[in-house]
Image (cartoon, rainbow, N blue to C red):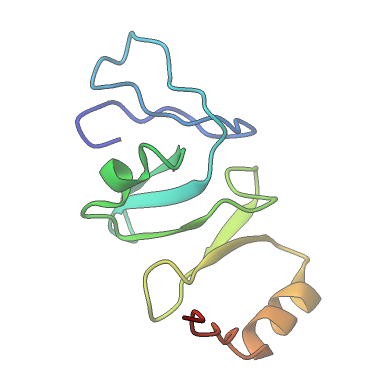
Amino acid sequence: MPNGEPRPTTGYRGCTYDGGDHTAPLCNLPAAWHVIHGDLDNFEQYIACDTHAPLAINDALDYHQIGECCGEPGAKWMFREIQGKSWCFQEGDEQQLHEALSAPEPIKEPAKT
């Protein structure tokens, strides 16, 4: 993470925040966010809990809520036009990808007063 060292996320489902000390234990709270820093040719991935997500999302290339295949071998990042609307998918899940791309954005109901 920014101010810390990236840790491999393959198969790991806990927060990778290390407080800037790459020899320190990881936060390890359940991951809630998947984050990419860098650019499309050279990037680092992080997964973060809700507490550390603001640190990880700051200056991120993109991010999204953690999904079933985030950080798994072979998973692909599906970028969208708006940060936070992307997701990861496994190659071979073309039907799932097609359904996700063709589904309308969910409409958020206004809060009742």
